[in-house]
Length: 88
Image (cartoon, rainbow, N blue to C red; front, side):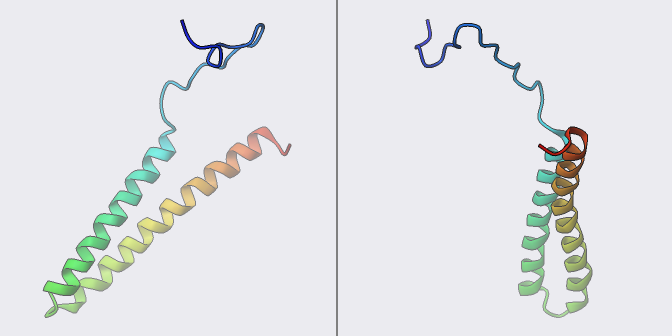
C-alpha cells in the first residue's frame, strides 16, 4: 500500500505517463553529443596536428552548424506546440 501522499485524491484522474520520449529531444541530444565529440576532435587536432591547420576550419564550421541545428530544433518544436494549442 502506498503512502497517502502518493495516492490520488478521490475523483482525481491521473494522466497516463508518456510511452516514449519525444523524438525531437532524442535528435537534439544526439546532435549535442556530436558537437562534444567534434570539439574534442578539434582540440586534439589543434594540439597534435599543428602542421596542417587547414583541417581545423572545416571541422569548426561543421561543429558550429551541428550546434546551431541542435539549438534551433527545440525552438521550432516549442513554436509548433504553441501554435497547435494556441496562446493561453
